Picture 1: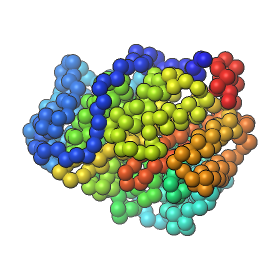
Picture 2: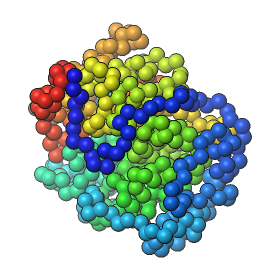
Picture 3: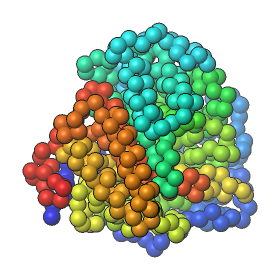
Length: 513
């Protein structure tokens, strides 16, 4: 049997394909001894030290550099040859080498209409959307999905208002035939993505979306300013939005000359707004260092040993850091790690039992293996993800005594491994029907019916005519929210991806199933 293969990104070739696993590292929320307020927490809490820089260390962890001691004012703009990570770090982390300029092929948003700020509580401050405008297109898709998910009227209104807020200043523009800017958030250069979550036990559904904002100029600095303005406008529009976390760590990610893949993505999961930042803003090799310092600034040093373990023994690569824009004591801090080149069985291990064996009857290592095999259309658990990498989101929340609680969500890329969306619908339903050992027949029937309704609501074409309407498939294990599956849908704003005939023609029969 051959493995579905796709063009590999050159920068990923050097990574370990099948790393050797270390002895199990179990993560739980058992209280640790009281810790200090400095980075000495790493030693007192049995947490590995953050990775050391082989050259000049770019991060200063001084005794006064704690999560509880921040200055009110931001530092002055840095010199050209300085890299600044935080308000307290100014002047302590200069490096003899200036940061590299962005590569010519970096993708940034193109120019759009000015006055993107000044959000108000009014649901639609922009001009009335025209036929084919961004706002009208997205609101139609969200409205159809919300109706199929049987959301209440207040929930629908909240989603509609959130769309108006995030698209103020540019949403009334007509959608061109080809993208005016490029983004890596959605498939086919769409700056939006829909998703619907299903509670596996209760059947309750929830609709979310993610997006990337355009900037006034085609520069990373302009995109940083757009993100900062949008955060402030969110705070002014929503009484429960808090941007404390972003303020604590923005100097780590918003560098003078970043070289990452994006500046800021946003998500809305009613009623919570979330911002995602790029830990590769200073290059792939420094991703772990930026995550380490961000967790320290957010007073979550105890979360570091999980991320460090994924990098040391799992060859994982942090690609996003997410922060809930809510009150500090309830905010989740999420680190998304990719596992390119891993066999299915290794990925399942890092997504489940390695960090907390919870005796969960659904999100188990064996069930994750079955999920991957069914969705990818393969029969062997040793098949490796060598195309688009699978992801695990490690989400941390605060508990007593400065401890942290961990939830995980695994994300499987499905669009590169399907012929068309009709084929993938059969795979999803096959996996759902296979949950009979933990769910009743009625629960499974409700789950399948709900999925079909939502798929029908977002499909604007025959499913056999293209691929990529399904983009990702997620499985979440949460103590608070229970077990959930999330189906991510592309907006197909610029059309569907083609049917992947080459996969079935050149690879194994399993991929054709």
